Length: 239
Image 1 (cartoon, helix red, strand yellow):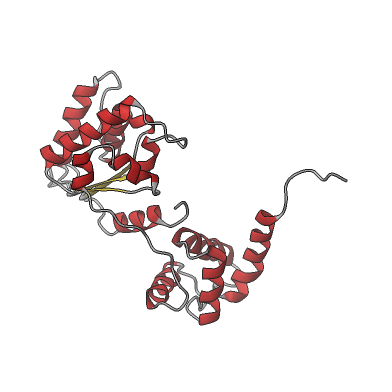
Image 2 (cartoon, helix red, strand yellow):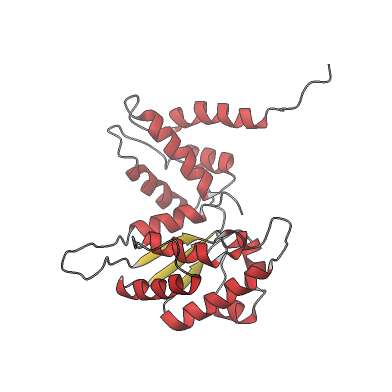
């Protein structure tokens, strides 16, 4: 579901395994490459996105075949161990229309998996499953999981908020783990990680040079007002 924090989790995971540009290495070493699924399954955009992430210079006049060959060569040279494709659901239109190019895209994914023999993670909203089900071989190769909603009384939520608290790097003492604060964050975010993260970090940015902390006292006044704005009717009055 939108706002569940999948991209945040993937980005945090990506940050844990940064690339290395040691002068002794023949090429940049990058264990993980993360790109977005290209609109309409455009393979050329997939190839160029991967090359851009690997900081590879290529000719815009190159054919798709040449770009693909260069992709395979550089993925191996950069010792990539995992490819992540985010927003996988965008291969299908919001109205569920499946374009012919999507079949070519899925065929190419199978080829890449066979050729490189490295893991691949595809992430998206539930519509992503519809894409995977289009091809039996793709469906059989991937294991599917769903991000659960976070709950105020769960230890995992406490651990998450402790981590977010540390990442704020404020000089004051923040308090995100008290039961009252947890309940507020979960209630306002409806348990979605992406919204929880946004609520905390937005107040963290506002706290710099001010309170230098994030507690319920900072969260509640700001987000009560922000959520009230979203709930306010925007249509013209009939009066």
